[in-house]
Image 1 (cartoon, rainbow, N blue to C red):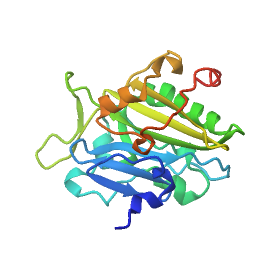
Image 2 (image 1 turned 180 degrees about the vertical axis):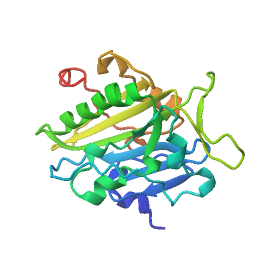
Image 3 (image 1 turned 180 degrees about the horizontal axis):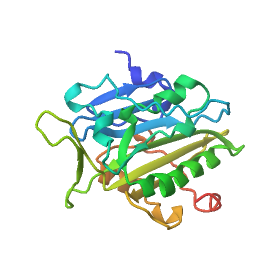
Length: 238
């Protein structure tokens, strides 16, 4: 039987499970019907530069069943940002490529001061890392985290026929780079969904901790492999 996910470059080192897998042109996303948002989004950072402008065409993803699908109305007046998982600035080679990052399946309710500050800083840092001449490819997987011993707030419709979105307590991001010699390096982060003035390095955690918190197996095709956890060479980035 043909393993279709293995044909995607993004899934080279693994792809977690999800209720619905959404294959976009330049990234793959695993959607949760229960949380009405992505469990994870997986991409390869696009290093190409272009004159493509940010699309800003936020819209529902009609591949998702209506009863589980977020719409623009859920975010309207909520006080939360439609926070990108796959960053718009990571996919700028073509207009359609950038446009796909504005599907609401790629969004999660984020505190504005989190989305526009520390989360943006981490996105920028990953792009700086990918821009290094020694890096061949940079794989990134990220998603929301919910703490089940803590109350979960929601946005969206309160009636039985509407869709509600739970607000994540935190977010994870795991970064895997491969250099021109095939050597792999990995960094993982967990960040509370709130403003923070701390440096990015304060949010570094072992990847296994992310897996336990998220219930996801990250980079499972690397089981048994030796991956260097970089400690020194990226201090100028995080």
